[in-house]
Image: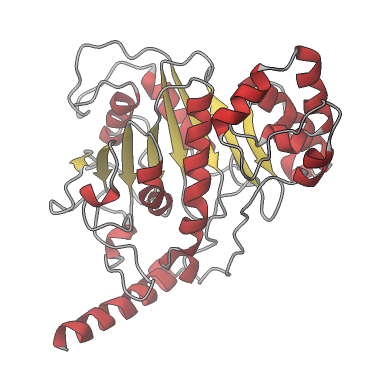
Length: 362
């Protein structure tokens, strides 16, 4: 009974800390965007091709890839024009088609907040305007990359804020740009030990593909939004596999590490890196039930350290991934400042991330 009392008190403290860390106001509750993309009903009703189109809700990414492989260029282009929101979000569809479909879909919204996503040179791999909006953007050449990394961000990220002006090297797009640049730079001191294998080309994807919490409140303290996002992440990685991309490295920041923890067993990730993590809904790295190598790092001034690592009545995300008992490989982060500084150029953490992304870390 005494142990139960201590657990209850700790859980209550977790809610209090997550609801008001550093004086932050609690965020409003979010409704998770799930299910197939908008436009699915019209896609299912389209009989112009003499056969049923793959159902976005049930077809696997590999089935989608086989379907598109059987089409000629004219049919592919027609599907992009007629169903941009479906093709743009259809995991397993050819990458260039998704880029073009999402450009059309962004323009079709007519919303100024999304306009920059259709600018020349942007490679938008997914775009869903429902709710606060979701987006995935590629930095690099995904079709020919030797290595692929996926940034999975935490709270307060959506299609509008994905690449918003903020402190450099933060936010999904900023982190992705910093990582890709770092993979093109020789490793500096403080990085994870590397071998002699050449890194090759690296593509980095900023994946804001789930409904994230807003602010630091109960949505951030429980796993509801992470549970809704995990299948979307798993399907996204299956889509990468279906188009022949290498097994990805998942870089999971803050609440994004909760999503990664729940998705881990359903992905073919080569490595999973938790940074600034409140927990991964697992007691140990083995409990993630993944063949990926699991890494974790936390800076000395990251406020996430003040969040109790508990899991009680749905509140809290469990063990600290940086603890020795969890069993993850450690990422050096002694020079990281704050909660969002992990991708700052010159830091030990970013040098280590680059080594992991290139497949050179041991």
